[in-house]
Length: 164
Image (tube, rainbow, N blue to C red; front, side, top):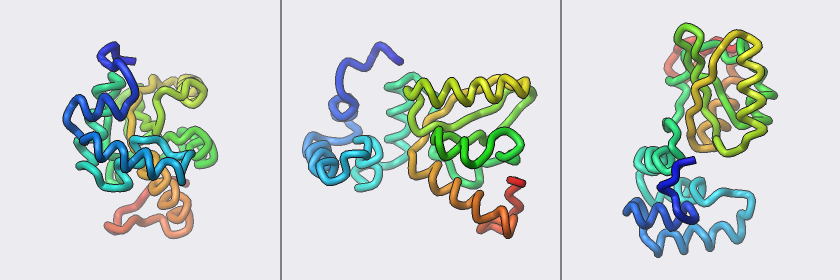
C-alpha cells in the first residue's frame, strides 16, 4: 500500500478534491443501510463523482493499476485460466495476457486471500499476475455476462466472448 495514504479513504478522496465532505456524509448515510458496501462503491453508485477519476484516484492511493473494467476489456477466454466460481468467490477476473503475464482485476487488492489464491492458480499455469483494481459492480456485471454467454457466446456488440 502506498505510504501517501494517511487515513480513511473518504478523507483521502476529499483531500485530493475528488469528492467533498457533503458527498462523504451522503455516502456514510447510505452505508448505514448498506453496511456490506465499501465507501468507494457507494460513492460510485450514488454518482458523486466521475467513475474514471474515482478509480484512478483509488489506484493512486493504493499504488495499484486501475481500470473501469468492461466486457470490451476481456481479451481472453476467462475459463481457460480460472472458473467462474473462483472468479466470483475472489471478486476477480483475468482480462488480458501478454506472453507469460496475465492482467487480473480485483474489487479489493487488499484482500490477501483472494490475491494469493489467484496468484497461485495462475503461477501453476506458468503465468505471472499483474494486479488491477476496479469496482465490484464491474466484476459482477462481467461475471453475469460470462455466465449468460455460456449459452449464446456473443456479447452486446455481436463479438464472441470466449468463456467455454
